[in-house]
Length: 134
Ligand SMILES: [Zn+2]
Image (tube, rainbow, N blue to C red; front, side, top):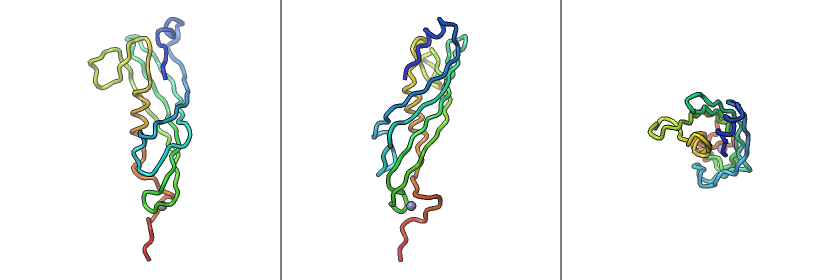
């Protein structure tokens, strides 16, 4: 998950695309009784600016399955999450991500996206009524 910014700049390329897959760590999933299915996909692009900051936008996509939060039936959900992140070379900038000006590691932004994108509940269907008590 690393973009070699210096190499790109040397080639006169200030924009680019990237895509990769990774296996999300099970402990990153906040929902109980659920699991990631297969790999998560990242697709995005970046723009390098004159002040060395890099604007990165990407889409994170993954599938989770497990028990419906309301009725405990099997459920799954495909999550698609769009994320914009600015990477800067100023370590004191707490609003943005830091990189050293040479190699931009996307891991921190991807991990945050993985966290923020998660649904609060997993439902077997829209409007699940939960366990029926007769
Ligand atoms: Zn349900």
